[in-house]
Image (cartoon, rainbow, N blue to C red; front, side, top):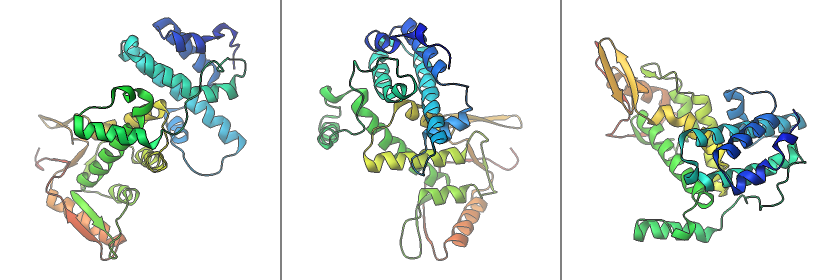
Length: 299
């Protein structure tokens, strides 16, 4: 790690005054203490990890991954938004990354602020749900980054579940004993399908990392660090956003173009065969709405 004295007090300065120059200096500071640049694959693999024993070397690597991911998220904010509108997001980022900065660079002062807790009281979630239902809005006094991020986790998890089911054309699927077949098992089946063309941008291994991470934070009611949420969106983006696919002289623009079939009946038969091969006697309820692009075989 290079000499960080040039960035002395940059955490405090940016926390209280998140203008462009301070944010750029904070970014450079994080890059400095984050060590040798890591691949995005390595960063994602480590920041989404929620289980398993870790050695001292693993812990050190994970700290670096979080620092580098936080730097990437800060760069995203500074490059794409008016910083005056993102002051609270930057404060939340600093509050969350402070714990790790303390361990990597003890000379940097982070004692001036309260670090962000992992959990939010249940009554806040209840009030948010109540206001959303009865007033179609969020409570003004809880409408902030710190308290909204868990709602983001819920929404991401719901959208991922629906997308995975509907790219298979399935409403729900159960074992012969009426137990739901989980999303991780469905992803394993999806990876075996030959009659559906998946975009090379869909990284199902990373999607599984995101799924495990979403489940963990949702069921444990943990707040998620904003730089990890940002990477979750980056991983899932190819599944949900408008995609272009070219077939001959025809260009298709479709939200489901990352998943293409030329013969849905053939794909449906293959999906059913793969499920029954793994789960004898499984019960499949098909969905009328499939989320995949159907194109003619001659296109």
